[in-house]
Figure (cartoon, rainbow, N blue to C red):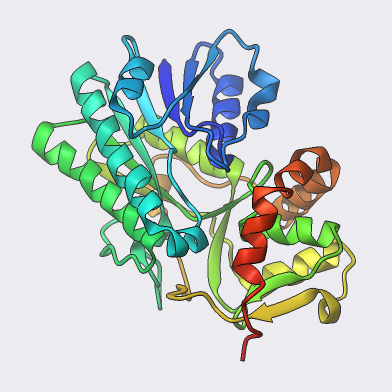
Length: 338
């Protein structure tokens, strides 16, 4: 199989590219990435000389660049390209509309022109919004509550509309909160780990009782692979870890592993606007196709912390410059939570 992977230098995308080349020796991958702040070529330095791998720099919103990247012979497109951080979507929603919605449209049109046999849209559980009770299945109403979640929901609806209108062979995977190596340090786990490694406090939104379902990146990538190979076109599939934890529970575990005093290192700050209280995914549909998560959460979290401890040369350059400016702007003005 020849894959076009968009956004393959990001966190989940780069893990997916490495995993696919490891497990499918007869596959080849073209990685098409704009290299925004979260796209890091160093994530794929271990395979950059692999003859089955090729990198093309470009923007999914650029029709000519996408046309060149997709070229002849591509069997499937897996779209990771997206703006993904909720906090950033609150301050700059237009960037999310452009990449997540317009970029998806450009890719769908290219898939139609070239007769690509599979298009997989990598989405998120956040399209379902806050889930007060039970778990959201694939037929659950989409109720996004942040600009990020709304842009992803809009892309999902566009993808499904192309299947109905044009017969485009589309698939959607909706993953829960993902953690693991190579995650840009603006998300909770890598932000808190690298803060603590730099002997800084961690900023916990509100009371920290927001609930998330955690999924190791390897399990997420295997789930995406499973949808690609076994999913039915026109369908969405939830990829959940089954590891519901509050944010404060995650914080306490990170503090314990790194030997930090909660009284000194936790800073509760005012909650972000529209912060969803709880996410919960029902992944029965994908499990019936033979997928299930393999990574034990406690072990996976401990291994992730160790990875950041051992790869300071990867994250320390990221936390300087533009990231440091963003961090100060995002958290310095937040008052303590009441």
